[in-house]
Image (cartoon, rainbow, N blue to C red):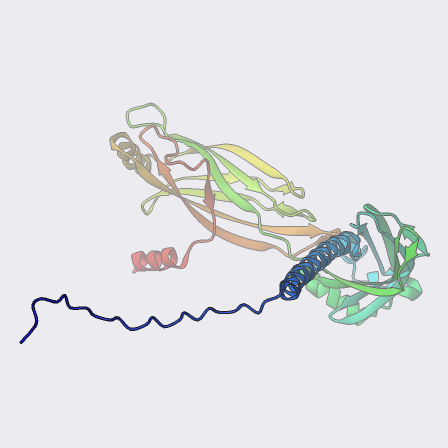
Length: 365
């Protein structure tokens, strides 16, 4: 039986001694770590500085290369002439003259030309060659005109070749090729490059652009007003810089539906290079066809068609081509005031589209 007269006593086990970790890091260890850290940081700083300087040096070199890199001269033809090409016996005194513009587009670089030669080809066959200029120097941002003439011993044109010229001239497509070769050296300050041979090819062709036609103004009297005449203005433009145009008589027809309202004629004329002619004309309208369009205009709007027929030929380098015939069409929206409607200031007269041709054929059948 338990003894209630005594207080129980429990003995706890002895606590185990705590093992303390002994630090073996000495002052030399910490000094070594600090040294390694400083060395790493210094290495990174040196590498970053070196790479930055290398990038800056590369950028400066690239900019200098762009600014000092020599550009070859640019060559453009400013004139080309074959006098006597309109004569069958012209080959006996054949002569070709040309002018080219040589442009040095470099900002700070000059060009020495030790020699320059020009050759003319026709159908890939050389027909002549000549030296163009003696040794010369061309400064930066400078343009030099160089003239060349082929004749006599420098030009070999037979009667057969001349006949080919005449045949192509009649078709309006005489095509030559001018080849220029030069031995050059570039000069940058006191430094000069090694010699370089340059070669340029320039095609010279009789391929003029077609003239353009457009109606810029029209006035149709409204129904009930006196008179049945139509006043219109046509603009004819020659877009060519080297070819003038000789026009035969121009016939303009105005139609409402399939009925001819009126017809106008413009006499033959010559139009210079890059020129534009404006003609203000009056058309006496057919009374039977005029009344329906006048009534339509008074009610709302109407659509008037215009047809143009003529023929013309080009004159390039003193050479006239054969005649070229044209048959053009246009559509003119007419407002209730009898004037051109819509936002356009002028309406072109041009070659009819395939759809309009098919519609015209369908109406005939």
